[in-house]
Length: 98
Image (cartoon, rainbow, N blue to C red; front, side):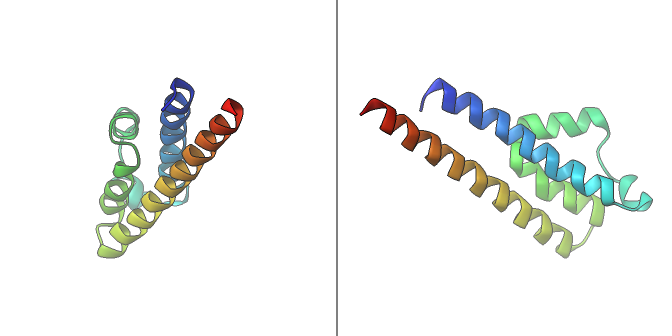
């Protein structure tokens, strides 16, 4: 893994995770927003835990099994996107070496 790949993965992980959680918070009714993270907790969770914090957010705000399932689906989607981008960067790197 190159430094470029590592920096790209870290940046995309934080960006995509924050986007998913913020997107949900923008659409949430007030009773769900009360249970959401404040800004400091939000950024701590996003930076430290990455996509793993997505299901936690959905469970905190919805408090249902459906909330967990929605969060798990978003987490898997983010992780698949990150894996595809990583694979693409690796293939581009392989092509550049040849």
